[in-house]
Image 1: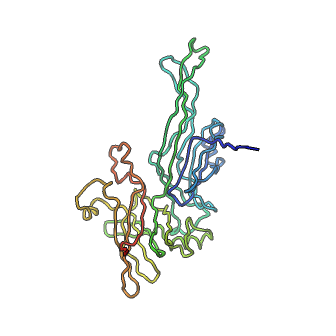
Image 2: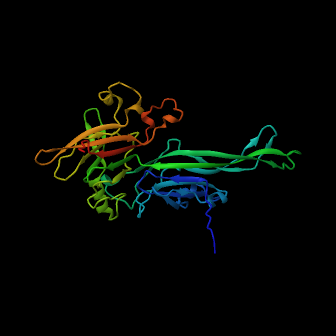
Image 3: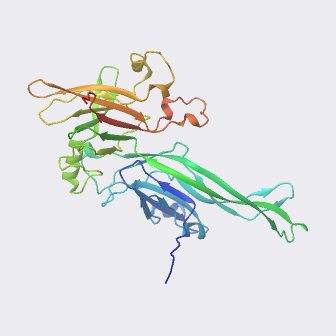
Length: 357
């Protein structure tokens, strides 16, 4: 009666411990009948194979490897009604390597391996037709990921060459272990003792003026919910404010191409706080940099105090802490790429700057 159930999975692990929104994974297998013509007729579709949550990761099923067919892995934010399409480019590719031993002029057996496709470690998912139809409420979702573990386990074995050569040769038969960590561009955490209303915007600077365009917020989530009649990505409260101890994942901002600003208020009868610039340019940061340090990584963590006032003019001060999610500075810096361009995401924490004990 003492039985054990053993589940055998792939060595490719996909996790999202710091993203409150579940991530859905799909596979596209390129069968012998896969052609460019079939792609145009939408005969080839991505098949959903699982999701990852903050508490539970996902390992690719072993049957993908055992099919010995070229395959690609795609991702998108998981929603009940599929509000987003699959990402525009795959994150992983399973393909065959035809290696050749030039010293013995003999072909080694085909080795199937996984490779990371997107060198930028960032993908975009366009909104689907099931989402909001108003252009003011349709925003793409940006997701970033890191390769936090990548190893190659190699062994040596003898191979009969048959007619190619009389002697046996040694070949390397390896298998990769890859672990990818997924996260959103911006996470907002509220540790205030009250709920917080919030808005995220993109500041578009022209030659004559600045244009503020909202890309997310409690009002946008509320309107999206009303139009699609489905739950938002992370509803929180019925009015889509961030509750005390809660948080929101913002997917509609691109850290590399947008100038992201965030503002808050605690009640609807209060005025909005001033905009908090998420990723300031060097010229704007020099005024806050006492040491005039040009290293982008030393700008963070950054603390900012903002105020919102009620209808009587009484101010309420909120503390905002901005922490980078990850820097690529630990990896070799690519030529011509600055530290600011390698920034992947931010955590924004709301707290009370005054504490009486």
